[in-house]
Image (cartoon, rainbow, N blue to C red):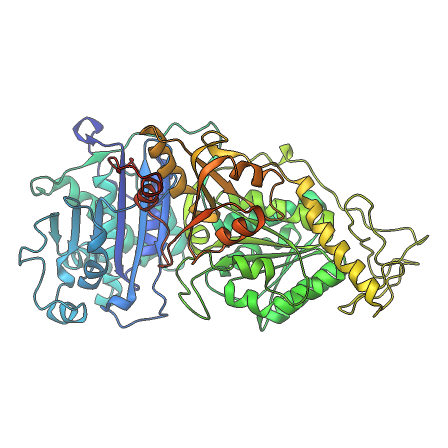
Length: 629
């Protein structure tokens, strides 16, 4: 049986409103598992939360080096939060390299927990330290808790007779136990997870549970240094419902499945593994019982071509990728536009160009999504703004693709893909179905007969009697669907394909403000994962009396019909983006507004304070005290 030390009574804990914790260590130290288990426990405690995993790009950098540092940040609170937090209040550093990489972000006066057992001469040298920072006074600005976690873990798991190397793998669980004690988290969910994960190796499960409990007991019984205690964060007031933690990639996969059910279609995902999109393939591959077929292709081109073939056959073809893969898919995307077949392309953006920063986030594929194909080749482009929003926008991608017989590009990014938040599980019965109607009647049929309202061509399933037809990449005659090189016909077909996409603007919501009035001194315009930081920054600016509004665009092409009117109602327009200025160029060209770009291209999401400072700069006022995170 599992035994648990009793939690410290709430009355003896210091009540705090919110806290940001970052777990950091070598890529083999299990920091992602530690952080995700802490987040799951926090969700069960009823707090609102937001997470930010930070992976090293190297598959296996040399142990103890700064190149191999892996981190996981979790922000949880007793109120609604929208970001993983600007800077950690607590930094858990499992080795000198983790300290070196992450110390600059820790708040002055923050809690610093270090595994002193890893601060050996060799590890210090690898991290660039001449002497141990634990003993030279360089960390006096922080509340330092030095613990030989390695030694304490070995003691905890000694009864299970594991080797030293395998025993030390449990030190992340010891550290997790300590943090769970410090912030009043329950351990039952983690113990259950460990039992399931190591079901075939119960002695390893026992050892990890023992380490978890030992860390918690240490917090209960040890005499902590002055200024280090235990804390309580109250439950958040969330809307009633059933919640679960969800990452953006999980929500995207489930949204695609839900969209397929609402359309009455089987789903076929043709995909090639690429960071940070691969977990969409992983998630959908486990949903075969729900009518999902997944095909891991040999390359990006084969993946999208298989998806196009599936759509031609009457299923909904889908493919997932990141920026480099989207570039490879460009020619086939043009084929899908020319054949006017429904297709979903999910682009989980990452830092570029080329391989770039494969484990970091960016918004630098917008121009490629809008224009990155040969010829006049318009398609619908939409963007999700939070992990939970990925579910809704995936459904919308399916609706638009099937109604307008067009490829739809859904843009997310590495931040959304891997970060998590509590997600209220929707009642699928409240979402209006949009069942697909295939062409069945042969009278008057040719493959480019169009719906007069949507301009979508007929979707005829191969093998339907009397509906034999050919489609392909060569231009077709508007009136017959036969191959045509007539110049006037090509002009007409180009115009009608563009009109079809432009007409989607009549079928999407008008643009609304996220915060603030429809006119004023400044509007901050965002898209994608900048949502949380912009929302908090604008909220703080408005509290200080500034006439600032927040507008967030989800429909990138076509854009909402009233967007230009709204933008022109403001004296100034600021566009924060994680690229070198893409949406800002579109807005300036399309609506002739003097929009100003604010760019961050570091592979990391915006901080609230960065956008707050830009708001004050544009309005020419002195910055106030930072808004709460």
